[in-house]
Length: 187
Image 1 (cartoon, rainbow, N blue to C red):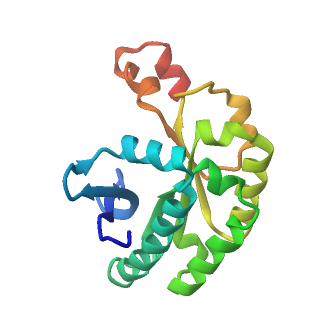
Image 2 (cartoon, rainbow, N blue to C red):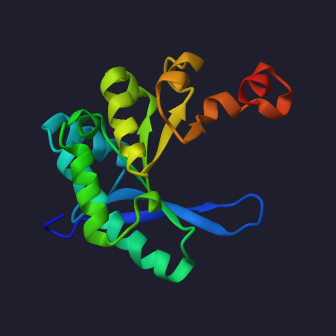
């Protein structure tokens, strides 16, 4: 971030009902001066391996809160920004306070921010993940379970994880139009 190689890209979230942009998801991107654009799965794995994933995630969260505040001024109060969080952030006892601090400093109402955790990250320590997500939701932060169906999915996990949104992995919906068993599961 200090060298200007990292930036946050945004993926729009569009309402199927009316085609309106209702939010966006923050995505960390790295453009290396020699290598060019580094794929997210590569640099996230590197950040995890060298122990800086929490720092990266906190930087993205801070940047995202600033942008969300600006966009809400233009797009309206229904606009919500989502940020992916890592296993390390989820396990950090200070994480909830850090999120609330960033939301407050950006002048955001808590419900304007959504945090996404992958199914795999949540399963690393189900009790901790559940407690952290519960605490965030108690303050009005929205929570989403991402990539559901990519790991050892269980509907029982959905009962234990306090998520406002469940983002189903493409592996579960790939054959939905075929009328397969996947259709019943997704429904």
